[in-house]
Image (cartoon, rainbow over all chains, first blue to last red; front, side, top):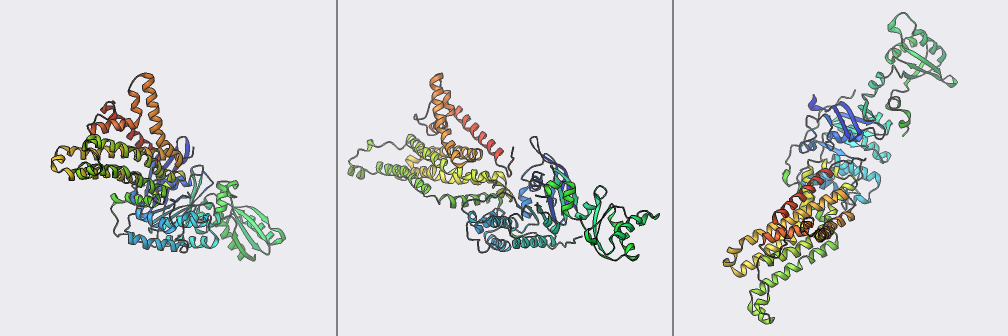
Length: 323
Length: 286
């Protein structure tokens, strides 16, 4: 299976005395993986390590079985879009894509076809003949994405690819990522836009201060920290007080399997429902079934903090989460 | 849990030869460089002296034309090692000026804003990147140094025949080796300074400064310490010494040839070291 994954084994990178990333061990499967973390948390360093632009001070990396120190092999199937706003001077959008495709080793005629296709995919057909220097921020972001996808890579690594895109292009770009993932490719993105990360990611890697704080599927990560950070459920019902008291009662029954780990219940204003905190989400959901069978009319159950935003806030801090 | 089918197929078509990919950089660099009218004008200017030399060679073998111009054949310089040495010196200065203009445009823009990652995130190594950028200078400087030099040699050979070629075959070798060494040195210095300084104009000034300020310092050291060793930091004098030995002429300098070769080698190694240090696909902000 390792030939199908991006593997980082105890990878560290130091810039002199400055820590880039430290002791990172990851195994990234196909699908969309988001790197999330505050500025300076090591996301870009991790991407540069995966693409071989930075060599690790310690540890080993392999991308689908290929070491990043072999660019001739690696970049045949890897597309990378950096966050740098850098373009060679004087080139038009299509010249830019075409010239870098030629560096990938594709024949000229094929490069022309691939250029046209990539430009179409990012919706820049009309601007393709204009110089990149005259592009807006969003257009430059799109042309950068186009150069990364132009050679139809199996692994796509994108540093903040959604920055500066308008809502329509943003949704088209997300659809493109999903299409890539659906074909079994790897899409690794870094982002600060948490609700989008939550929406598109199959798994997230939360980073802070050069360390991986958590990784995996959002729900899995959330379950792991429910002991320190009880899960919150918003329950809409007509008898919130009764439901809250029954939930606490449920926790005192002799049958341990029927206990639901409720630690706090807060009634919502105007009797709309109750916000419950529990240390065992699965048990609580089972208990809710029993309560419903006992005659409490439950209109809806919404997990209130089962998302990347909450996980980020709990693990990394509310200060960065507001960025 | 998302379930993904492996429907993606890797590209299995033909690829261009790896060795030739650095030439792509050259092509796109020329397209940009030749947008500058100053460069085109300066390049045209660089051919004036070779055309003058060609005329001189033609005249020296054409008695009626000399008579028409009322010139004696002994008034013209002989076509020998010294003639080609002077040719190299003149074209060498022009090559230096051209390098100062073109060289800094090659690397510094890529480094100034982190654009190097764009190149290095391809099946393309740092060595190929440097080779591609050096090739831009190599071809351009070749056009004004050893290529016209060899043409002059061919003109002289066609005018005199085998009797001149046979004893002067070594001149052809010197006409290639001498300028190629200078081109190599200039290219490495220009790329290294461009990678180091980043600011294009400052890098150009540094290329010129290294030669002219170096020559000034060398002169000062020689005068103050009453030695000739100071000339070792004058790259112009170093290359003139090597050319002097290659063209077997007394017009060279009085620096020991071995020391000149050592300085040339050390300078190239230093430049390569600087390039290896600076040409990286990422920026470390300290």
